Structures are given as C-alpha cells and as structure tokens.
Image 1: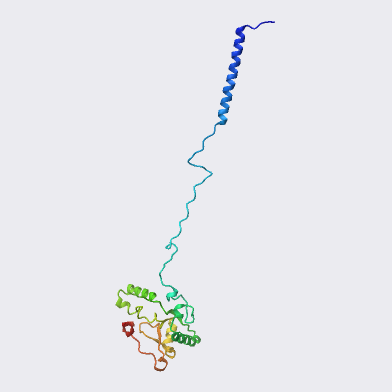
Image 2: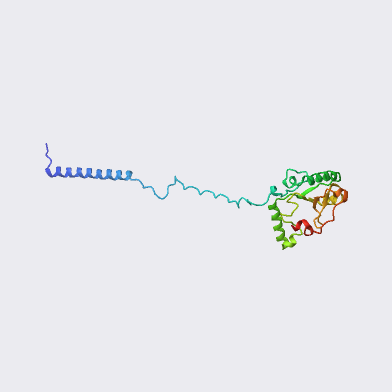
Length: 220
C-alpha cells in the first residue's frame, strides 16, 4: 500500500476548508439578500388617502333668503288675485262691508266680461312703511311721496278700508257703476283706489280729493 506524504495531506485539508468557508459566505449572502425588506415610507401610504375636504355649507345669502322683507302675510298681493280670493290676507283683512260691496259689484260686472283684480288691499304697518320709504326714494322727497303713499298711522289700507283695483276695464266699470254699491274713487290721481261710502247709493260719491295730501285724514 502506497503512503500519502504528510505535505499532500495538509494541502488536501486546506482545500476542503476553503470550500467550506466559500459555501458559508455564499449562504450568508443569500440569506441577507432574501431577508432584506425595503422600509415603507412614513410620509405617504397609497392605501390610506387623505380625507376629502367637506363641502362648504351655503350661507343664508347663497340661498337667497331675505329675512324681514314683507310677504303675503303683510299684505303683499300675488299676481292674479281677485276680490273673491278670501284666503289672501290682503283681501281677507278688508273691512267686511267693503268686501261685501266688492263681491256684489264684481258679480254685477261679470256678465260684461269684467273681473275685479286686487292690486293692493289690507297692508300691515311694516309693509306700509316700506312702501312709503320706496316712494320717498322714487319721488325724491317726503312731500312728493305723500301725494301717493300715506303713513302707516293714516293709511286706509292699514285699517282695511281701501282697495286698489285692476285692470283698467274694472276701474272704468266702477267709475260708472261703483256708487250703486257704495264704492267710490277717493283721489283724482289714483283711479284704482276705492273705498266704501255707504250712502253713495243714495247721494252719490263725495267729491274727490286731488291727491291724499288734500285728505283731512292724512293730517293726523
């Protein structure tokens, strides 16, 4: 049997250790490669989105609300209201005697194709004040405005004793037949303004004032 020299055995052992060491290095490298994880960013996560901004609530102005403005309950009259629309405050709050006379006259005018529309009737003091302020702005002075709009303290509209009738065919009919029902035009400059004068059916309507400033009732 041939014996291996000692130097050869030493070289063989060294070679084996190098192989083992190389394998350990490779295993360590593979372990490090697959065990490494990319850290997640702390500033953004695609799975969690920031909340959407809440929609701003519309203000009262956006909704077009104008609190405090007179409405139907103050005597504002919608289009197309007649003397028979008793559900409308401007009509319902008229003096009962005046309203009765209007109904009678309207029925008498109906065969002639005439209908009594109400442009204005009863008004709240607040509504009357607003109309007066608007008249002052329109006519430029309180004195000129007084020829068309009375104060809340003196206006027969506020007391329910006056009605403004439309259209022109109705006022024309009333100018000819209104006295028969006690309905009289009071102011020459307002052919639409009618009030009840109960004795007009016997004596006729009283002489008209040129405008409200000539009416003693407006001097209070």
